[in-house]
Length: 242
Image 1 (spheres, rainbow, N blue to C red):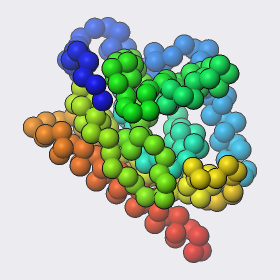
Image 2: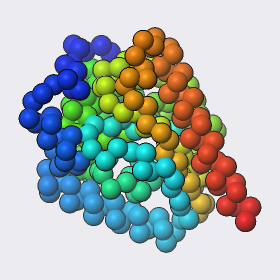
Image 3: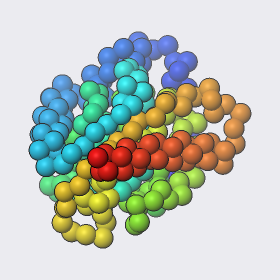
Image 4: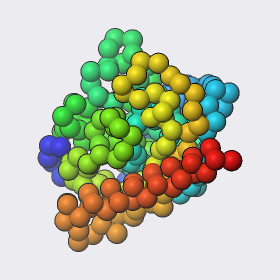
């Protein structure tokens, strides 16, 4: 990730706009019309997922009800962002690689909270957009591996995630997904029905990262993501065994 000018720490900024953003989840990171559209798409996705796929989520109350939140998850499938959003009342913002922003598809992605980043990293513009949406009181979803897993396992995290987390100064909620790889891996063009499990872990607060070097922050994030993935995998194995 590139290094933009250091932003003001939102946790100490007393402006009324940021105070209101912390008090009104989902109302300030997008317009009322786009918020309504997001809820319609979320409802449709949730209905189809319930009918076609057996999915279950745990720990979603670990996501703070107000204020900026960074959601970090393992990445198994194009379906991941939909399943991360279905259990949450609050709308998600999320990064997507810039090559997906074609004339029609790009408009759809933006309409539900997506914004582009370069394939090689989040970059200056992606960093600023992420921080801006967090300061507006939104939830931003990131896949720190940078790409979908080729084998279903958690890969190494991009080192720039530590810089972003330092500057965001918001709670970071790790998430583990299991099952979306079996439904639609990167190696296959069609979907296959398979149960899905999602586990939202305990939020990592900014104070927990104070004094840590970037490598230590990256390892802590990876460790918490592995724990969440382990919970999701075990839930899925247990349910399939029943």
